[in-house]
Length: 262
Image (cartoon, rainbow, N blue to C red; front, side):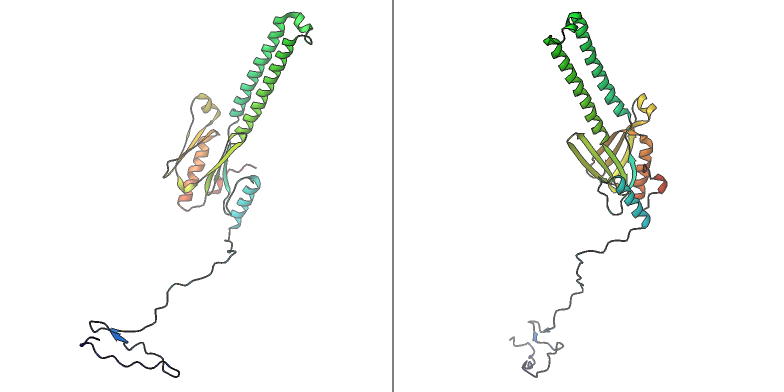
C-alpha cells in the first residue's frame, strides 16, 4: 500500500447472517487516492424478444388482394408477391407472326415451283414413269422434306415469338425471354431501379401499323432492356412512366391505367 494512501475501512465478513455489502462504500483506492467502488454491472437497456416461427401475415387491403388473385389466375406462371398485381400486359403486334409465315409460304412456293418445273422439263415420259424414275422420286422426297421443315420451323418461330412476354406490375417489370424452343429465362426489374423508359418507331410500316420497340434503362449498372414488336408503344410507355412515378413517390397506381385483358 502507498504510504500516503488513506486507510481502508475493514470489510464486513460475508458469512452466514452477515449484512449485504454496501456499494456506496469504497473497497479500495487507486494510486491517486480516488475511491474505487464494487458496484454490479448496469443492466442492459436492450430488450430481447423471440421471433415467432410462423410470423403473422400482414393485412392486405381487399381491393389489392382481389387484383392479386385475378392476376394470379390469369398468369399462373408469374411469381407475384402477396400485394403484387398486373397493371399492364404488354402485347406484341401480330405483324411479327405475319412476317414469319410470309417467309415460310414463300419458301414452300419456291420448293413447289422447283418440283413442278422438274417434272415439266422431264416431259411426259418422266411423269408417266414416276414410279420407276429414281431421280423423280428422290426430288419429290427431298422437296417434300424441305417443305415440312419450313412449316415446322415456322411453327417453332411462332411459339418463340408468342412466348416472349412483358408484364408491368405495381412493383416491378417482368420480362420472359424465349430465345429458342428449349431456352427461356426471366428477368425482373423493380420500378424503383428504372431510370428511363422510352420507345422507338422506325420506318413507315411501324408508324402506320403502330408498333415499335420499348427501352428501359436502370440505375447503377446501366443495364438496358428492350422489347420489340410492341403494340401501341407510346401508350405502353405512358402507363409505365406513370407507374414508375407513382411507385417512387409512394402513391398508388390509378385504376384507369390498369390494362388487364379479360
